[in-house]
Length: 269
Image (cartoon, rainbow, N blue to C red; front, side, top):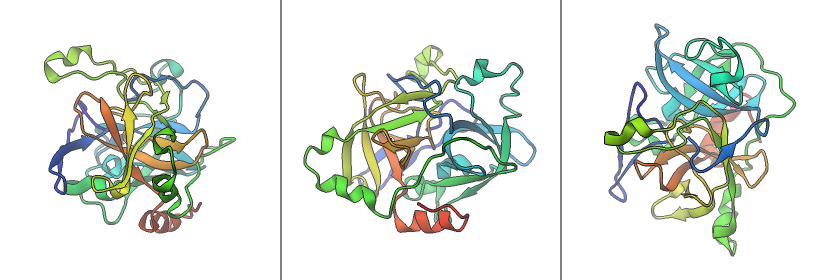
């Protein structure tokens, strides 16, 4: 989600007539520390180098960083990325928001439409130089999340959400109370909906409460790993509640259109 950044977007989910906004930081979570060092914070910049918004994402290979489509959409022309667990304190003079540990070029799902961003909300950043790590995120197999709709105890399925977004969000009149530390956080939300009339076949709804944690503004593009694995079931996409409560929307990346597009960059499950 993006909120109180340099740009804010709102879209109407026409099928159910509910207002959703690009998401999401991890709320009611815990500092990730060294748990997911391949999850990073990105700042999109325009052609003149002006910062536009901040999002999260996952390094899937030394040169490919997976995020949300609304994080890479125009006028984004360049991206800077940090992988410190605490970007504010991780490296003195770290250059935020202009100079990250690595830069790259953003690309957006070819069917992405900013007026209905949640339908194809997938983006990729091709890094200017490799970031070599001991582990990376992995893509899910084709349609692999469909089995979650058929299993008993669906609500017991957990995901691991990771991101750098707001820790707490308040209505605009109390926005001064927002907690927006640039720290990588982790939560374990539960599955609420999959393959329903609301989610369609391209999204998930996950819990967002004090018991499980959830996502918020700035977590957009961050991974929602299946269980405790490094398989990215989906990227944080949208929120329904402006205070980052209730549920969080996740864009699935196990569909053919997503995997086929990512394969053109050499990224395969």
